[in-house]
Amino acid sequence: NERRAMRILLRITTRALAAYPTTLARDAADLKDLRAYPRYSNRRHAKVQVKGEKEVLHHFALWARTAMHVIDIIGHELERERRGAMLRFSEAGILCGGGGGGGVAFLPWWWWSSS
Image 1 (cartoon, helix red, strand yellow):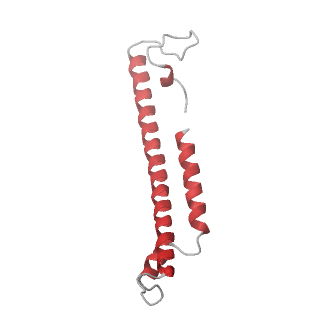
Image 2 (image 1 turned 180 degrees about the horizontal axis):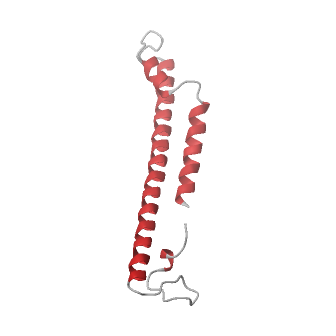
Image 3 (image 1 turned 60 degrees about the vertical axis):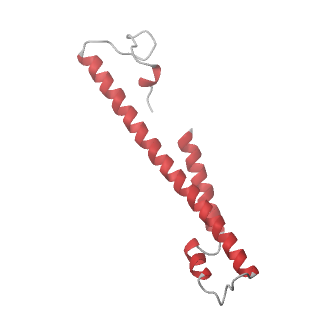
């Protein structure tokens, strides 16, 4: 499912970031030191390249966390709607059931499935 895919993406990006010997913040600070990382030097270009890789990984980690949060919100909203519909049908005296012939299903099957 989508949430599992986002967890996997987050795990991959977290492991990749942990494999670097320095943090993104450290790289940004290092690049301010023009003595250690002179302009147009191979050392500076390598640091810029690695910093860019980390920025991409941080972007996808944030994206995965945000997606999981949105998935959770949607799940809670759907559950609240399902419960509200069941309550309205119950109050109206309409039998509700999830298929199997026990009741009259007026809503799609996914309203009855448990998450």
